[in-house]
Image 1 (cartoon, rainbow, N blue to C red):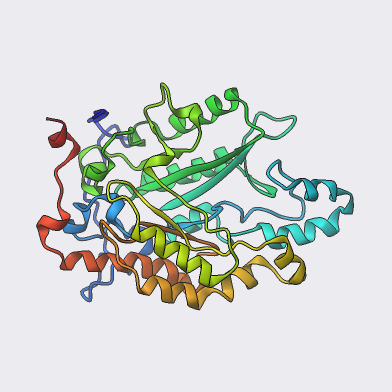
Image 2: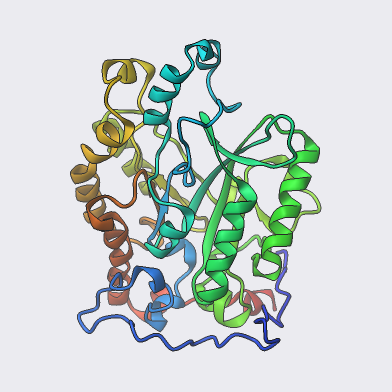
Length: 360
């Protein structure tokens, strides 16, 4: 296997001292076992047994098209927009009105999502004419990538026992030099917080990442540009992420159930619990919004499906959805609390050897 277990000195605080791996937190897990009592510190407050479970076997809440809350009527049409949309740009503000209603998938900012317990983020990234900045996109331009990464690293600095998975899913109007620039941005922003790639992700636990090496970021990079000479980025095969691409709840749950049933136990698995409207669906509901038709109206069915899941080797790992704040973040709380099921397993079923022990 590739053994990238290094940087053992960890991340230093501004005072030059290593951060306390067990910072005091008065809002620890409630006596009734509610793992989601404090969403901001939910990983910090997990029982030690769960910190010894492989990250790929924990239930982790994520967001789909994570950083689109900053999309507004002033946003420019982005390179990922379909050609038919680009040809309709002459409609001006009228087109923008409908695009905003159907392009924005989240209401919360990056920091708000972190504070609400989201730990997996889906990034769609594009270049922009007349600037060297890289941007989050979903039909329209959203925030600068650097702004998002700065927010995340700021959160991680003050939450040393929380980790995040950053999934660079799609790249638009990108050349090789743009990939190099983006990867350098990740390396510069997160430094030794980045978990190096390994052939054996099944041995990566929160205990290993946080308490042994102070790693806090798993960066997935779905492009061959990161395959050579980039040890800090994880390939698509380690984080399968099938897209159901349907607005039918029946088809969606069938795809999700099939995917979980057939997931590989030694990889992560991302369940996209989202409805994807077709153009026909959007035209039929033109004066509504994505939030209303594909999130609010879908909320009860989504929560019912999650309630029937379990984490573990053959169960749910990462699940993502739109508008994570609905129902007072019940989606986030329910996903986190699925991990209570792991506490009933025997220790031998959940505790694994570390990557270092495996490499010996």
